Length: 106
Image 1 (cartoon, rainbow, N blue to C red):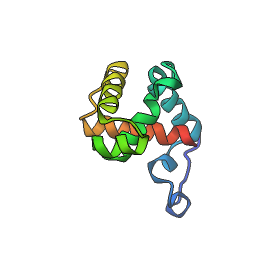
Image 2: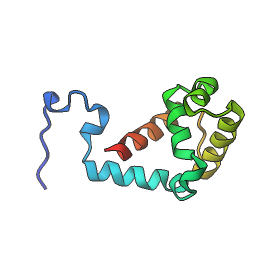
Image 3: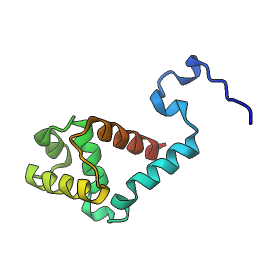
Image 4: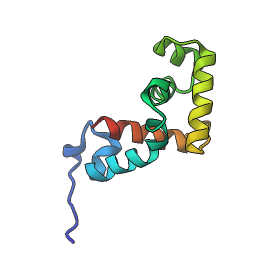
């Protein structure tokens, strides 16, 4: 199998996602987020996770962005952590989840 040559200029603006094969990134995303997407969109878990991460874990800012009470968001994030079996206070976990959410957008 031939190695792929990547030039930095080709990756500008793509971030880490540009380093990976799009199909691989999307498969990773689908597998990681499956417990949340399988729970149903009505629960708003994926949207809540994105708002939480985009707000750097600030409850009030994320809740305001979603138009929900911060206690509602706290409940959702507790549910996200339970369904994923991950600690949302861990920066590595947050980075991995952010990556998965961004890959899902592409």
